[in-house]
Length: 286
Image 1: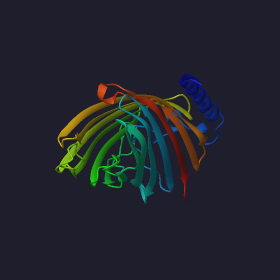
Image 2 (image 1 turned 135 degrees about the vertical axis):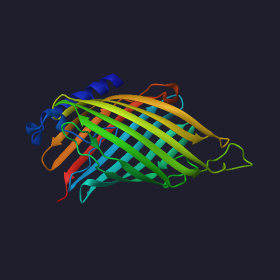
Image 3 (image 1 turned 180 degrees about the vertical axis):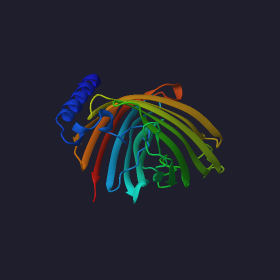
Image 4 (image 1 turned 90 degrees about the vertical axis):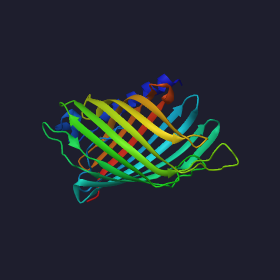
């Protein structure tokens, strides 16, 4: 079966599954049927009190430099009210990069997000996030940085009409005193150097119905790293990813969303293409 046939079959399955769902979607504007279920761009909506979300995603990457699967699991919990949210993200991978296998657990993120602005008729939703990056990955295997790091993100979200929404991200990651293995056997590790990376993101979402949304996401990252000689290096990578998400269960106390995206590298540093797979379960706990 060709890739095109697989993609067409998956899209048809999404449409059929979403078409048979019943529940709260019937009384909503189409854009309100699914929210906080973007793939690459963060939406600025905290969890409602008593509602927990479990998010699974996997990406298949293939380009001249690497191929394989990064995986991510995120769980989001409200903290007393919609203003405060705690979550954690567990990253793992099975990647071949430059002929070397990188597999295992990555660095874990512990996240706090504050709902500074709730969306109104003229105002966007705004929910700044702070994340603590724990060095649970392996520096030697290439799955972690070996230091405690920090990340800040500023997501904005605004529903423009009953079928259209926009999302914007601005973020920074700070890794203090990073060391990496050097190419020279005489000096196994580089001197300690702090690294700062930046990220931008934007997305547009169009609701075909309350249970099926079309998505177009763009992300750009200016990533700082250390090369084999221990010198700082910076690369800018840009990706564009069209996709679709569908609520296969859309009830008052339970929502399950599946989706697929197709990230495309827009410059040589991000010369990759692949498939992004998404699955989320959101339910009330009390």
